[in-house]
Image (cartoon, one colour):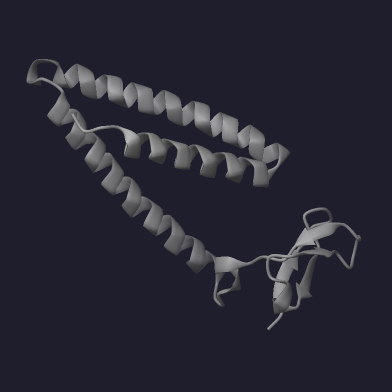
Length: 136
């Protein structure tokens, strides 16, 4: 089954054999290198539906994460400063969200691959820090 591929240089679309999934090929229209998509993109179906499922899973993850974060803060903070603690947590999260969005956005303009690699590496590094932190 051919895989619809889009060239990043000329934005032209073409079909590539499924045996080339994940491989680099020459665009038949402009001759530049294009990557034949792999993974979830190979699953037949509407791309809007696939992205909806991914965003839905992401939303559930964020719901769990925010619940755990708030519960942890409530557990660790004394009642007398809990309000200030939640305000500080929200401020730090907001500033971090803005700075990371700007940084990844600028990286995305330069190279989407670089931006995604950065996001993956920093996420894994954060997970390692959390996993290696001893419980108090």
